[in-house]
Image (cartoon, rainbow over all chains, first blue to last red; front, side):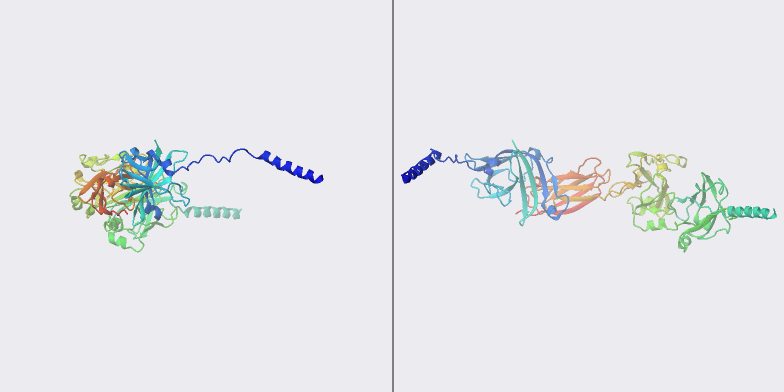
Length: 175
Length: 386
């Protein structure tokens, strides 16, 4: 009789555990792709300021190493449009305004990485002559990524024998 | 009683002896003009402002007793009383000492050594005084290779100081070597004279122009006349003008005085001479000497696709610069600009657009001022972009 009581008690305890279980499958939420650099950088941008940087002087500790060009040669009219396709992939770009042509005013663009890199290397916009993106003719490093403020900084650096000698830092805001 | 009388007599004699031995010394003494040839008339001034009148009464006789470079007469030489407790003596060294200029310069003391005294010496006398101006300033200037030099003395300084800042009250001597100034051949020969055309504070105040049409000795006291502005020809194309700035430019001692600026003008404006970077500017004491003009190109290395920035800092006032940049067969020109007073002037040159598509490896840059003085001429190599 005593043994029957124990069996009954154990059965009741087992049954009570089912009261704490749910009736549905686990809900993990729907999948959202991470934001790419392309999403952040595409669109119409116009110039806030542009600075010429003497990389040789900067490395040697000479002064001046930077001079503003913002008020010269119509740089204030500088604009750049970075187009993307329906899937958000970079396609063509075009420069507007009357600023000096420091890089090709139109062509195609791509990114050297879809997401910010963990090694600190700034992502770059690669400029191409052709839609197939076989002939690269320029590179704009993204030294400041758009965030809460719709502002971005692009840096065009020229090198000779792989040694940088001059850069142009464009500070842009989104239209 | 007898002892008391002897004591009183002794005291009186002691006090008289003390009076007879009175030493005096000038607070300051100076020479006008600042720079002089030994055959020029000069004046030495001695200020006894703080010497008690009881010792040296106003206008009392004062004599020069000099032994170097010579004692010309063997007797004390009477001086003049200028008033305001200043005594002076005017002399022409070669005549006064009976020596040639060369002999005076060659004297071993290289200084005038003397004292000032009463006629009998014992009433009052100074210690040894020295004027260290036996320097051939004019001869040294003539061989210095400089077109212009200036010297000044202050009232407590008996030695002319070359190229130092001056006060409005300084005795200033400006020297000019016409032999080195293009177009001044007539001034070298003495056929024409040289004049100062100048003004206070970069010609902003108290301007004394050279009015070539106001001629004649009668106008010598009239500012801006040919005579008033004229330099003295010392011979061999060396000219000199002695003046006190505030008096010459018709200012007050307390007027703002940062500098005086001037140029040399040959009679009737047949030639002018100014510093290579503008007019000559002599700064007032206390005004810091600006750094010399500095020209630089930015960036240090440049390609055919870039912007060239030409900058010149610390420009002389009134100097306006222009540039020409030549690449291959094309030359572009423009002006450097800047905010008043144009101390920094800058030009931005759009190399990327101006020389686009050209096959060139260098740019030739020439920079000149408004007087066609060449500031820079040189090549800038163009680096090849990767």
